[in-house]
Length: 339
Image 1 (cartoon, rainbow, N blue to C red):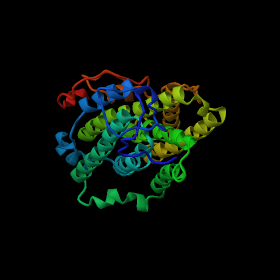
Image 2 (tube, helix red, strand yellow):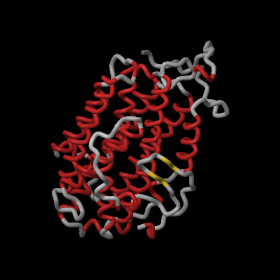
Image 3 (cartoon, rainbow, N blue to C red):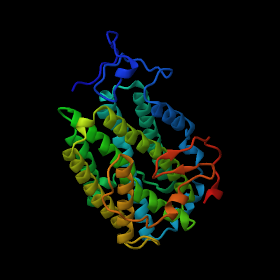
Image 4 (tube, helix red, strand yellow):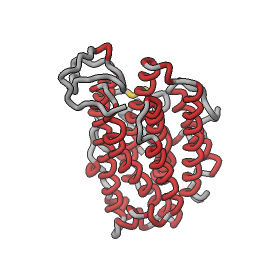
């Protein structure tokens, strides 16, 4: 499959002919004529979520960081370093590996918006790193010295590398699932760890920043889940039992990797987290992600730390993260009473 033509005046594609991929668009983004109404609603939600990292007050975090325990400080640094990698990867992956093959203009717009938000997350991590470290390279370069971090980064990057090269219909579908996994699993052990610090009254600015980031990630997750479900309606022949097994293998490996990472960063020394709790949490998330695209759960477990969901929400935000229902709202002010 070739990358789509950016400007294609010879296109005769009508609205009904439009496809998530494999279509023949003329290159115009026309928000007045959209086939995928979910994409226009999601665009409005993403636009309404606009925020800027420097709005978050980090002065107290700079003081708090000095008094974190050694395990807390280690966890904080590792989480930041790993989040930096994933948003750096995703900023480029969306534009270089995904969007060139998506042929619905309204979905292209959402992917472009997501890429901006991933870069904005990278800026937020810079604000966090600069507030707590005199040597920012120590955190940015941790992947070079911490082998567990490097292992996780290499595995995630390798998954995308394996789906590149000669592009086929199946590779595009699997790439959608890989992005669902990235947006819906690989961030969450780190998010929960940051919330644990905030719950104990420490690093409240960092927890607030993560709340904004996670709010964005919810829309990113919904974007790829909606792309998968739309493709399933258009190309049901692609969703074979063999494809489902490949997806389940992808999820199993992701659960093992993220559960292992969560255990590594907490080491049984962070209040509220044990190895078993972390694994069950990631398994629970995997089940919700599978259900969102029409597959049966893999693990059948309950949510072991429901406080995380309430902690990650905003007072003026009514979001059911795991059912995928996002209610539109304005960003509003940043208020630490949310904690």
